[in-house]
Image (cartoon, helix red, strand yellow):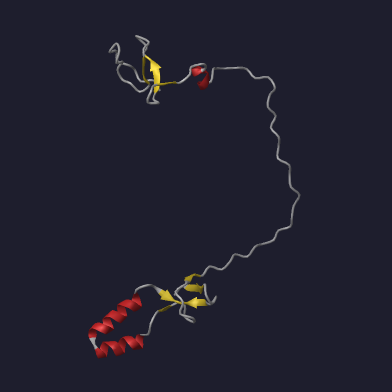
Length: 139
């Protein structure tokens, strides 16, 4: 059986079922229904502490022992040297939209220019509402 720790009294040991088996036997002799109801109550709600009867219990897990090791001198992390002169290989992703401001309509939706008629349309439009041209998706 698993060891449990009572949070009220601090006892570590096995848990027991609440109530008494003797009372269950007596109630079964007096009447079948009271005995069955009492046994259902005993088995519902889990286990209790063996000494104080509290339901405030948890599985016992002993604290791990900390092994003290001698303190060693800390080593300094290596500093990586970055070359001073760098060469631009390609434009970054963000330089593509440099200087293009987001245009918003009266509903606060982003707009872009139609590639054919240059009228403002929604950024997610599939077809231009002014000239009727089909638009390609731009990722």
